Amino acid sequence: MMVVSHTTALSVLGAGLALRGPDGSMVIATDALYDERKSVFYVFGVGLACTLLSVVICVWLILSWEAAFVCFFLAMSTCWKVYRNYVRVLKRFGYDESETVDFDDIFNGPAAISVVKSGFRRLTKTIVMSKKAKAEMMAAEQEEDDEEAERQLLLQEEEDDLERAANSNKKKKQSESSFFK
Image 1 (cartoon, rainbow, N blue to C red):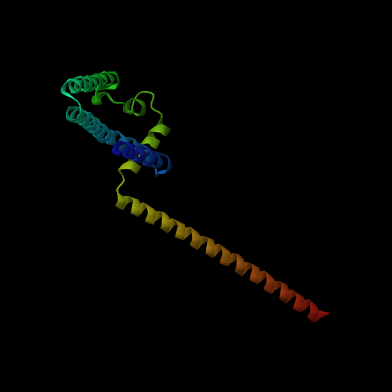
Image 2 (image 1 turned 90 degrees about the vertical axis):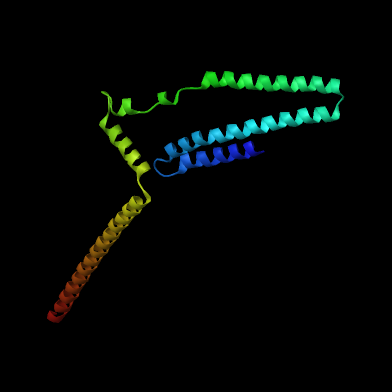
């Protein structure tokens, strides 16, 4: 149950962060899921070992010694097969951590594209950026938004003043024209 609940939470929350999170969250989610897989494997292994151990204990407590010996032998051979399968799969999919893919050859190599390079730098900067820097950046953006709103308000006031002046001139001309009639 622990493995099922753990993997369900990881798949839902990890995918949610990767797909709907802020900039750089794909990298964060991928790294976190990679780190969490160790604990999932450990809990799964402990659960499997405890299940097999409880089978062995129950067999010796319930059955006669001849039947218990046969069941014990079957349980131990199952343990051996599970272990051998694990080693086989580990050899097939295992790799040296020092040989993992990094994108230095793409971003710093002879075929580096400057647009992609700057985008990668921006992504790296976003990931590394501290909460304080994010708060400062948000405050600066808010200040720019406030200044833009103030400019829009001043423009609107100028337009209103011009319209009032035009209306005033129009009324003045109407009153002058009616005075001369």
